[in-house]
Image (spheres, rainbow, N blue to C red):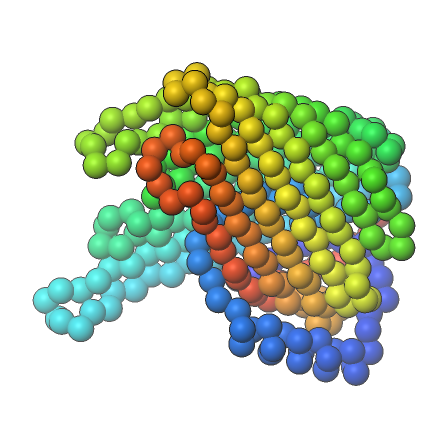
Length: 287
């Protein structure tokens, strides 16, 4: 998978550091595994700490297609597509982010996985200790039965700590959510639910070394839906560990998980993924 990003230029580590980074890569790769899920993390992009005008973008796309089987008269046809594109603009006062992702898998012309989301967020007065956010998102997850989920809302974003290459941020707000689910074991019976929910998140970022960085975001959302008239809670976490291998290559390990206590339809309450990969980074300058 190929990633392209625009970030600030910086000094790069020595050949000795590169050897250490590759060793870390090997160890992490041996003990890594993967499973499917998608948790939104708005803090993955390394945002500059000053008030300079800044633009970043990153994207990735990969696909696979084949027909393999043990029997000549029973071929297995496989097609998979995965991609994402993220764009952000940070002016001296405000920031704008647009994040998009798609995951599609078909086996023998039967959709196995079909997931996508598009998220847009504005952070007003971003350099202040207390700033303001507006956000909207659309998504679907056909494998789990989610036909669509549309949300819109806003809130406060508070910088609790931001020193020595480490930051801690608390965000809180409210949003309106409309979602439609397909009831399992039915032809196409749907259920639509609306809810006003509160949302709280905590994000932590730190540069451990010149070539090591870590970021994590935790969400907690709660609200009462209008169909079952009951409180529903949703918790999610996304953590990313980054090893800079050279001037343009990084190795990333990501873990994400989500739990919903009362799903609208009977599905797995807890989902997670652990993944790793190589990232290519194209350096750029501030305006």
